[in-house]
Length: 252
Image (cartoon, rainbow, N blue to C red; front, top):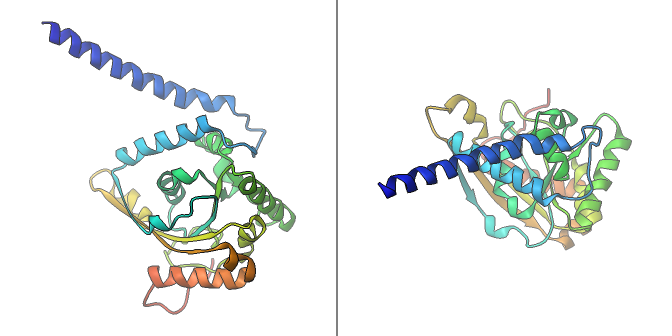
């Protein structure tokens, strides 16, 4: 009979841990003020909460992640540029590249989501107002400052919006100034498959493919214009995502 008591004790302990974790996950963001849009310090606690809960979500959503080129990721801070097809893209990417503590430059609406909208603020995610050049430049300078102070690496989607037809859109190369001003490498990556999650869940597993294509070192970043860097990065993505297509889709 002793083994039964031990088993019940273990089960109750596991249940208590799960309940405690859920309480921490739900209550901790309430201590983050919605009046403060950005923070200049990457909170280790909220970063852990972000990554651990995302890992659990990956299991629940039955997402299988396939990666190539991860060995190319620099040891220090960097700017990553990637295509954007799905609302799941940043969620998957901040988990896959969690060792680099990435912070995304994102549209302001994403900071209003319950729980995660507050958590990402404490992880130094930055909102950008593309309709106001002055505000956009402030976001770029804030990103540069975060990198220089070794708080986070920065991830941007140079298309500026999600491609609903899954073709690579025109790049806004100005965001590459972040790497030039911070004097860090640019990591070029692609993501595919996140757009299938909604239609496949819960009956089928979703496969997401993340490929690190190239890294532009600091010498290359600082010696070329943002248009030159953006053109090279975009061509690398086109070769991976649309090898048989010559022209990109126009923005809506």
